[in-house]
Length: 206
Image 1 (tube, rainbow, N blue to C red):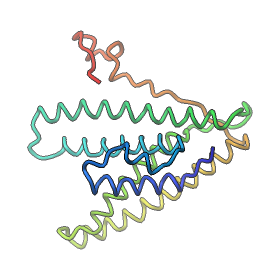
Image 2: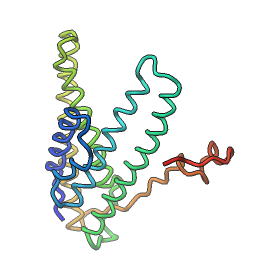
Image 3: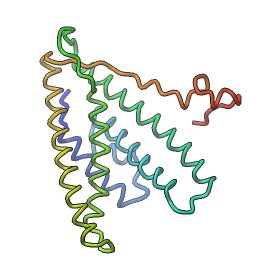
Image 4: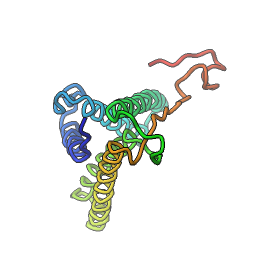
């Protein structure tokens, strides 16, 4: 399996543009852009979860949002965040299988490729919205300039992260570094672990 961080970053940018341009552009349509590569499908599924999380969180910040809307948004955020983390773990499982045997003597890398791909997804969303602000005609010139500076920094950070991911994967394949599957162990959706749920005898609606 070839992990190409640049290719994934480009797909994240492309689907971010498409999803903002068409409200009914579904996740299933976006996955077709990735062809038959399972890693790309998982990465784009993770990106869609981050995209939906971003906009659900915006709903709760809208002035005048009702208590009912905020409660609904909170439930949606919990569900999406669980899905996002499940996809991070799925990417790491797939990459561990692709990497094959890892030397136990190789230094352990604390951040997994799946977590880095998730960070690239969030950077793609920040870049899109910062670019909007950098060109927003209703804003002041000072506001646009400030966001142009932020945009340059975000792009530099993404370029750095792309390089780090490619370097990590090359080192994993040559057994110079290794990584493990780190389970997120989320507790908030589990009716057996979250006292806010089990004290009331309630269950989570998926």
